View 1: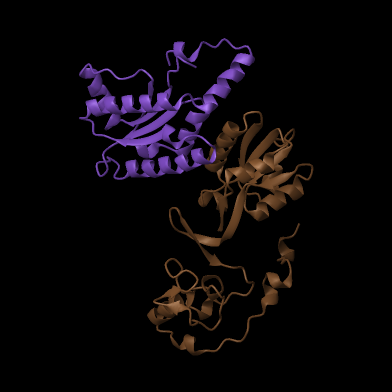
View 2 (view 1 turned 120 degrees about the horizontal axis):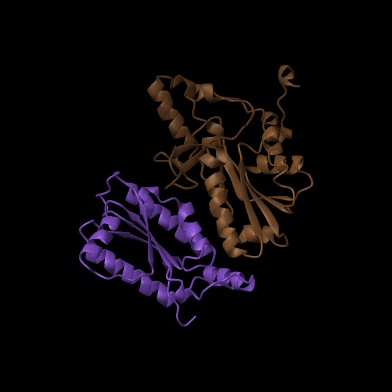
Amino acid sequence: METFEPRIVAFCCQYCAYAAADLAGSMRAEYPPNIQVIRLMCTGKVDPVFLVRAFEEGADGVYVAGCLEGDCHFMEGNLWAKKRVGYIKGLLDELGIDENRLEMFNMSSAEGPRFVAVAKEMTERIRALGPSPIRVRKEKKELSAGEDKRPVDETGT
Amino acid sequence: MIIAERKPIEDIRRMVEGHDRVLVLGCGTCVAVCMAGGEKEVAILASALRMAEPEKEFKEATIERQCEREFIEEVRTTSDGYDLILSLACGAGVGFTAELLEEHRVVPGLNTKSIGVAEQPGNWSERCLACGECVLDLTGAVCPIARCSKSLLNGPCGGSQDGMCEIDPKNVQCGWQIIYDRLAKLGRLDLMEENRPPKDWSAAHAGGPRRVLREDAEP
């Protein structure tokens, strides 16, 4: 998979990271198109099931981006998310999947450049780790089942 | 409630070896509260197992309780065609599911730990050993059987130091210190003076598997 383009899911709080992404857009700042953003009211809504399901569905990397610690609009949703990310990192480890494929970040809504930096950091990190073994297996299976499946670098997703 | 925790994935994978279609069956009562075997934990474990064992099918289902006949009957049809049931219930639930769905092999996904309480979210601790004859009236409702490491009836012992138990002075409180403090608050330290005779352990599991009968409730 020489043309590997990571597929990364980012669970973003609407009060900080999502607004930061918006700001990055207004600033005409570019960030890698590998990131698929899912907006949440608060990262406290991130259920461990979401994180596991993202990997099961073929994400190469997943991150949760919440408000700065102490600044959560719902008091401590971001702290809950941090713990859940830690819990699922342990599960990934049990499954033999590199726990660095999952991460928690914090940023404020004013930090458009940080959103870009985080997106770049995760993309580079996952690019270095290579495709998720789950995704590789899944795509092989789909190909052998004869499904119309474009190479990963052409999916644009 | 019954406290349990998930077995390591490695152990679970060993149990599902040789089975292609696995029903991951959750229990929606005690083990759901202690975040070990409810609907969410079934979703997480099934997802993890699908990633670890892509050739196998893992179906998810959760019933209200695996310790009651009528709830288990609800999955009788669902379980058709699955050659293994991975039960996320306490030991009683696993056993009863196997007893009723006798055509299936049923294996445990959890280790059952104790009868206990949720002290706070994410922190569950043992409070009852089901000894069969409750003595909480004598001890300020703090159980000497469950909370004293030696299950002493006349404590504390010499291993009680600074309110902690010698088996793990950093984490385990001395049960009899808790009893003493509670009785002091209640103004009933006189109960500490009573000498208690040995307990009749035949009412506990030492007397064999126990059964409670209520003729008026029987069908």
